[in-house]
Each structure stands twice: as structure tokens, then as C-alpha cells.
Length: 404
Picture 1 (tube, rainbow, N blue to C red):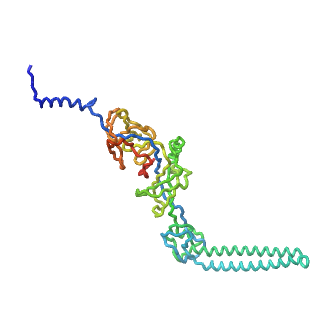
Picture 2 (cartoon, one colour):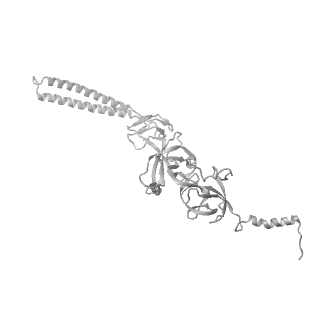
Picture 3 (cartoon, rainbow, N blue to C red):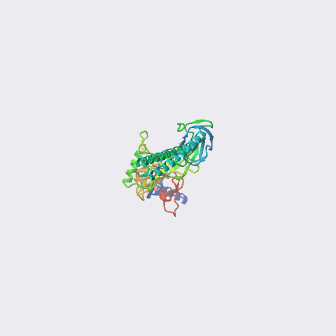
């Protein structure tokens, strides 16, 4: 047998080639897949529902005349705010001034009759038994009572005449924004006519009707009775305008709905908002967010979970170095995170990054990660502990997007 002598360099190369597969390969022939993970934490999460809504005026008055006549002036500026009691139209008042003068004359005549009847009664009563009879006293008393009644009737007629004269100036019953007049100077109007002269709309505060499906109301009631939801002491709401802008004012509930629409199956609940800049106008479609209360849950980033074809939500967790898929029950979302009430426990290790190609029971190598404000996965520095999927609810400001 011939012995082959290798140089020192060739021997070292051969040794490295033979040793490399044994050092690099894990059992099964492949190294463990590296995944980014977060440690989950159970916390009290705001339960927020997003509802469609429509703005309605808190007050909307149609202005109509209470007396008939020719319109002599329009004394307001359309599109500008007017106060309650501010004049808007004037109606020709000559006839009503004459009626008031006649009514005042009737009052003066009735007062004179009362004075005369009172004097006659006093004289008759003093002479009772010495020239007058009881029947004459009673007749004088009846005449006095009749004169007083005539005076009361005349005073009532004068009050009506004064009211008719006052009503020749048509005023606004509420404060608000006045519309353009539907009549012109010189037009004839009649008392209590069907057509309004103008409309005054109160824009501040503004009210918003929000529509909640009755089935969701029943689910919320079940969650309250089962202890899954702690209801807030007062229900407040925020708004998102049609252009996606978040409205700054917070509204309070005015009246809960008590009937279900037969056409939509929804319950109408009304909220009231400040509207100092008249930004919200009646008829606008809005999106409202109502915070019902808090629920004990685990927040899971929406990028860490997926739904199957039938809508079931699932996520991967790491147990003893291997991944396992969990089926989740969620109650809506909060700040781009699912509100998970079942399927995960406090302290579970959730796979947040490297989800592609995972299979049940696969061994993985974990790397702690966290999420930045934009929801992007970032690795945790070596000197920092791994953080949970999301900050506690009390660290969050207003939710960027919250739906149930």
C-alpha cells in the first residue's frame, strides 16, 4: 500500500471541509427558523364602537306671520347669526294701530260705566230702609257687576289688539343662523300661513344621530351581564368628518334609542357636540366613536394575526421552542390591534415577525421585538427586556382607529 503525504495547508483545508456540515447543521438538516416575538400582557382595554351618524340641528324654526298684511321691510341679514327675539320682518301696521285705539276707547268707556255703577250702588245701599228697598240695592249691585264684566271684556280685547300690533314685527323665537327670505317687500302674507317666510337654524350645539344595530346592543348587554365589559359612568363620543379629519370636540349622549327601525334594524342614539365654528352642518354624514367602557383583554397586533377563508382569527405562539397556532376570539380592535378575549393568556410568547412558512410544531429561534408608533417591527436592544405587543391602555392617547 502506498501512503499519500499531504501538505500542511491541504490537510487543514480537508479538516475544515469535513467538520463544517457537522457544526452548521441542526437535527433534521436545517437550522431553526428565526422569528421575532413579543410577550403578551392582559390589560384593561377601552371598548370602542364605531357607528355611522348624521348631523341634525338642535333647533330649527320656520318663521311664519301671526297676522295678515303687506310686508314693509326685511330687517335681518341672511346667513348671519341672530339672537332670540331679534326682528326679521315688519308688516304694515296701520289697521292694527286703529284696532288698538278702538280697544283702548272701549276700555275707557267700560271704566266710566264701572265708576257710575259703583256710585249708584253705594248710594242705594246707604239709603236702605229710609227710601230704598232691598230689591233696589240688589239691582244696583247687579248693574255694578255687569259693568265690571264689560270692563274685563274690553281689557281682553285691548290685550289682543296690542298683541296683533306687536306681531306686525316678526321675530325669531330662537338664536341661530337665518336663511334667505322666501318673500319680498310688498308681498301679502296671511296669519299662520303654510309657507314659511324664512328658517332659523341653531348650529351650536349640534346634535348627531348614531345608528347601532340591535344585535350588537344585545351582545353588549350580554358582555355586561357576564362581567366581560365594565360600562363607563357616562357615554361620550368623538367624530370623524367626511374628509377623514378628527373632530376635536367630545360629545355627550342626549337620549338613548328606545325603538328599532323596521327598515334598518338599528337603534338611533343622539349625542350633542359643541360647534363653535359651525363646522358641522345639519345633514352631514359622520362616523362616531363611542367608548362603552373597558374589557379585560390582550392586545394583538393586526399584522401578527390572520383570518382564514371563513373569517376565523388565529396567531402563532412559541411553546418550549416550538410554534403552535391558536384560534382567537376578538371583540373588535383598538389602535390597529385586535382585542383578544379568548385564545391567549397573560405571558404567552406571540410570534410577531417571520410568520412566513411556519408549521405546527416547528422549532424556532426567538428574537425579542417591539412595534414602533407606525406598527413596524423593531428588534429590542440586547440591554433591554422584550416588550409586549402594545403599550398599556392608559399610555395611549386618543385611538387612531377603533372599531368593534
